[in-house]
Image (cartoon, rainbow, N blue to C red; front, top):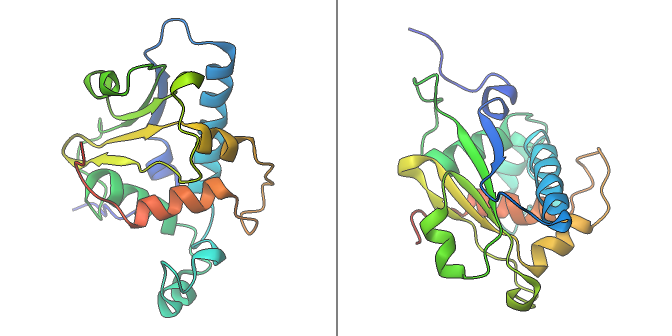
Amino acid sequence: MCDRRIASVSDILDRVKFSTKDSCPSELDKLLYTAFQVRFRRWLCGKGHPAQLRGKFIGDELFTAEEHDPLVRARCFLHAASDLDLIPLSPSLQFKVCSLVITDPVQSLAHSIQIVLNVPSSENSLTTAVPPPIAFHTCDTRMVVTIDTWVQNALREPCTLNDDDATAFDLWIHTQMILTEYNRT
């Protein structure tokens, strides 16, 4: 029997496939899509939980136990996206990221496959300071992400390769992974 535990981040990252269903994305949409990919990979490859979440979303004991664990985030993502703690046996299982430019929020549900990035037009963008929730659909390992004004601003925030410097994006995505609500839509 093979060991199906995550041995390295690449066990998960190699299964994440980014693509777009939009045949004609704007230059801004392409930039946001690329920025999301970079930030998502950066977050996934980080170690432990962001320090800013200690005592708020992560208990002190768990934070200390997993502080330098390079696989915590990969395990959080696997569990959030599939409701599994072990890598599925299917070698063909992938987490696909599909970017869509949607002006009608209802339309995004009909076209979403796997991890979907919805980029609303500026006239429909949310202008609140509340980050959007990520909808997880574990039966088909799909995660729907809406790139609204808050996420766009988080993607524009400067960051370094040092994962000790958690950005607003890191805190948002990590919190979403540990506080999953399945099949919200």
